[in-house]
Amino acid sequence: MTIALLYILLSVLIVISIYVIISRNLFSVIISTTIFSMVCALIFLLLDAIDVSLTEAAVGAGISTILFLSTIRYVDIIATDTKKSAVPIVILFFLLLISISILIYDLPEPGKANVVNNSQATKYYINNSTTEMGVPNVVTSVLAGYRGFDTLGEVIVIFIAGISVLGILRNTKGRT
Amino acid sequence: MKHHTVLRIVTKLIIPLILLFGLYIQFHGDYSAGGGFQAGVIIASGFILYNIIFGLEVGFSILSINMTKNLMAIGVLLYIAVGFMGIIQGLNFLEYNSLLSSSKEGQLLGIFLVELGVGLTVSNVMILIFYSFNNMGEKL
Figure (cartoon, rainbow over the protein chains, first blue to last red):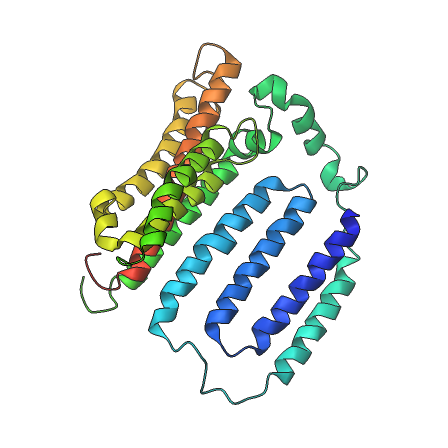
């Protein structure tokens, strides 16, 4: 049942991305990327990755849509100057799709016990998180506790992103 | 959007729920799904909704650009300060064992403070990016 639903959602993703490629109306492209993010969030939810799903729904469908809609005020909504046909891009899309689908077979199956990624560290975190950290949610204890240094790097990356946006956009009209 | 009465009323009703949900994700992250990053984005989206409906001037009077800049730096500094507390007490960087008397409570407090720093930084960076996209070249 879950697998069937997963395949349906994945084919919806393919349909949405083809529409994004061939559409000339930027507004409907933005809305379809929002739908793309929501379907992605659903897929993550089906794969039991609740934290990732929450992030995808909030960032992909929420914030980035608002930012795209804020920038669309400064450009034309319908791309009129491009008279080229979308056929080469669609062919490129299908080539990429086929090659990535072939490559996916080399990935290990998610959640298998004998894969190297799932062998030692994961087992340690699952067994010792409650006794060492007192935190029942293993994701939180790994993110903020065991792997706190990585999360510090992530936070600094977000901080630098904010500073960069401020630095790029503050000089647009010649003011300091 | 001064003349959209329905939008204004619904926004007024829904914003407390969004902020409350964000705080729940933030402070209940130890027990259920979520954490600082997700909570920061949800709280930021509540603020951004308010700004869209009621105008940027009203938004600036609640949370000015300078305030968002300061708060996002405070979030990173809070994270690093918690890390240095470990070094001061003779442990490794970002080791929370001796923040409180018992090791488990120290871990809980450390994770709580770290997630608070992440939430502060993420929410204020998102609000700042929204402000700068919608206020090009003015007041920044």
